[in-house]
Length: 284
Image 1 (cartoon, one colour):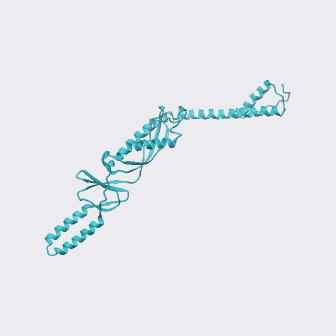
Image 2 (cartoon, rainbow, N blue to C red):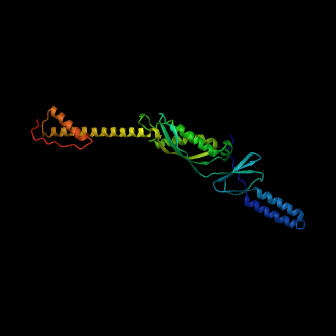
Image 3 (cartoon, one colour):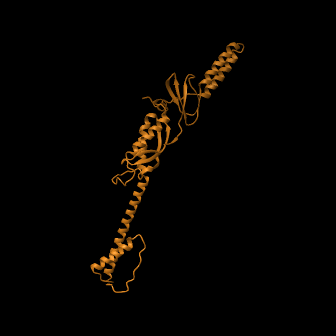
């Protein structure tokens, strides 16, 4: 596999200066022979003009001689090359590519919508020009393929796979690193430098989004209830301990059970409790 070959190119200003000097010398030497002077000057002018190449910053020119690759000029400026060279311009600027939202299945088979943003630029003009048919279309297709592979390698979240160490919705840095490495491997043959790759959009597909939202809400409620119960048990335990230590009241096991039940109802209930005033004795 060939790679890029950088050729310096002759200084265009120097070639123009030499042409002017030669033209002046010929004009003096063949001053009285216009039938020779004019054709020679026209030929020299055409050779000089057709060989000039202007390269703007962050651009390159790929040079071909009758189908053979001769090199690339990546330095900006005015240059002179063989007039028979064919020049193909390629931009070396960094460019953004945002993929469309595609529907794929995650590791557990759940349909999700995902899109990515890719920042890239050409680093090897030979590979970009001749190793792939159309490097911009190649980038689009390979990025979509990398996204599909990435989505199938990780679950969307921890709800269905609690043992998963990396998920698409939580471990963004790890997922983006895996995505970038996958795209880098695919773009190597096209001479593309991947500057950054990251997920731009991630969500469940519409047909399961509502069900997944209800599941997440239920999980959040269960987790909140678990925390409330833990706190209530601690508070009840603390209350019984203080009553016992300060000997405020002696409670048998039955009254302790009733007190624990009442306190748990008060602390764990999702509605405001209505106080009941006992006007009799402890036993009534």
